[in-house]
Image 1: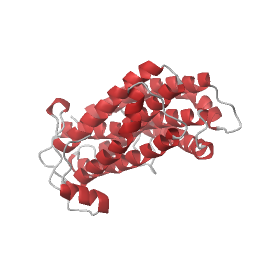
Image 2: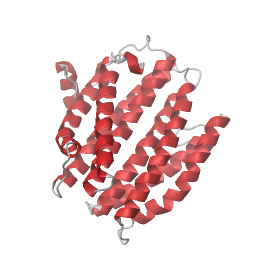
Image 3: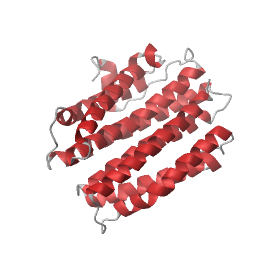
Image 4: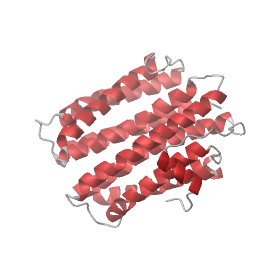
Length: 294
């Protein structure tokens, strides 16, 4: 939770008013790589902390997930503040674009709404049947607002990363893959918990489909997504590794998304664990893309 929310930024966030972009000329190419990576990672963290709250509530490695949830919340808060005000330890410059700052302030307000439910879990409690749908609903505006913020950063970065104009988009979409792993995990757990199964069944199928298409596009190119074919041999090998893990978990995700199938606690936990492995390997790929901006 950020300590200060500027009045102008707050008004902009609530009204959707657009202002002229400030000058990012002082931001280095390397810093743009960091901004794209960490802002994109915030999308993933919004889903990861929701997933961890659901895991603890479900009694799946409850204490470990309470600890993980606390760490995820702290990281989300630190990076959100760093994206807004700067953080030398993260190599993040302060944001001087009022429109982007307004978006970040709005995300802070949305996060504040989630904190009481998340803190209940970190403090040893579990969410009630009435609270589970509330958490499932509250995380989505954070995700969508953060995603639009990343796209704004991408537009600014594209003006600077002239050596490879598509790099900002590639970092954005490869980073988004991390979020999709956690979104699938969250949706699989909601299916196990029988929360809004019609909606979550469709979302899980859609999320898996987008992950599958983007993974192929990152390697082979996808003109509709704006993705060029990968040329770096190290990145190609890393994407192939992600693909090998995805080929294992994809059938399990498809089974979980089918409302006619019973999903056991063990099956839900297996899906989450495999997707966590993909998250780690996809994160390595994102850092390899980020290194190309230096």
